[in-house]
Amino acid sequence: MGGYSPEVNISLKSGNVVYNHLNKEKYNPFRVHILKEKWVALDEFNKEYYIDKNDFSFILEDKKIIFDCVFNAIHGIPGENGELLAYLNLIGIKHTSANSYQMGITFNKRDTLSIVKDYGVKTAKSIYLNKGNPIDLKAIIDKVGLPCFIKPNNAGSSFGISKAHSLAQITPAINKAFKEDTQILIESFLDGREFSVGIINHQQKLKVLPITEIITENDFFDYEAKYEGKSEEITPAIISLELQEQIELVAEKVYNILSLSGFSRSEFILVDQELYFLEINTVPGLTEESILPQQAICAGISFEELFDNAIQSALN
Figure 1 (cartoon, one colour):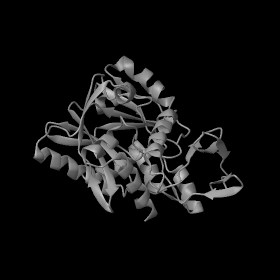
Figure 2 (cartoon, one colour; figure 1 turned 180 degrees about the vertical axis):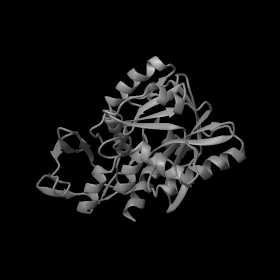
Figure 3 (cartoon, helix red, strand yellow; figure 1 turned 90 degrees about the horizontal axis):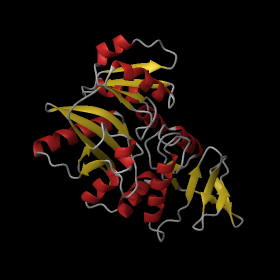
Figure 4 (tube, one colour; figure 1 turned 90 degrees about the vertical axis):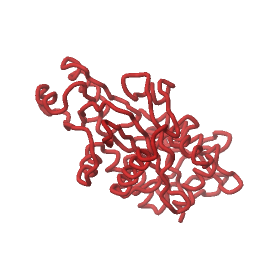
């Protein structure tokens, strides 16, 4: 838990929820804080023990502790972009996420959209910019229209995202996004119903969880809406069986196209009965308030079973 991105505190909260719900008679879990300034394991009394990065171990009362499995609850860098997982693969420690290459692709919004579009999945119109590229505002509006979204290409939890309603708002929004990343994505606004779909490996089978419809009080599903109660999340979504099956089919298709394993939560917008894919999260929030755990509860899967199943899937 932790990480090097602005999502560090959300990750610490997710990690603590996982730790608190693990069966202590079955597992001997430790919380490991992966932070810029230190990598430490914490015991139940919050005493810190420095991690040896050579083999991801630590010394507890003269005994070397080596892990059988890492539960990845790091949102953002280095857990969600694949960096930490490449390191764990290198030293032979199993983990609950997809492999590092897949994680790297899905953390990059542009690369994810480029791949799924080739398989016929509908997406918003978009423009991609690197920091330092010339910015042609007319070309941007001609391509994506107004309003439009400006977002960092490699970031989560809606950090750095803006919705521009006018030409004058685009440049400040671009500058804001570039504070979070050196690559940004500018996308057309899709006016429709928003749905979130969780997928897990459950009992060695792919399971699409009950769909959530997101109705936000804000201009879009931003940080406030996600984490400060400024949205209504309806699980299961009140939709027809036909629409439910359509969304499940596309969500599973995206998951398989991207060769994922472990948890994922993908976002869609329904516009005039057409389903558009927005993005996918491979380390979704795991707090009591988070969408994926609530979807699991709706499916009759407790927090303990959800997390236990992820570890067993990784070990097997």
